[in-house]
Length: 181
Image (cartoon, rainbow, N blue to C red; front, side, top):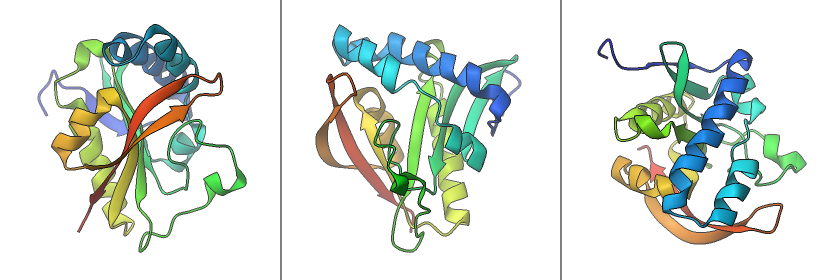
């Protein structure tokens, strides 16, 4: 890592406000290339929301440069695929690493930091951490801006789906997975 590259570290509760701001800024700046205005507004409101469980579990990461969070993302050993995928009791259930995939979650990069390998750095750490816990696969639900990164990293698309936000707006997404064996 060079001196100008952001430092990768585990997020803490003290980072939540900066993570929230980064998520919303990233969605507002990047999603318009893939979604219409209503969809972007809905995504800012419902996708750009910090999952405090990921932070508490120590599975959420930030990339920080000069005291500013410029990227974030993580993985989960729990049965929640994406923010807003439900708040059912089963969302906090621990996954079985032998039979279920770990979930890559909430990946965002500030728009002026895209195309610099930050997403790949987060994915590499997610993969390594999931492997250490015995997981054999990763899965995720990609919004359209993330699909090229995930494909380049080795995820394969499984299904194109429409996700309905709480306000009724739908977003095209792609479920993807990747073996770790």
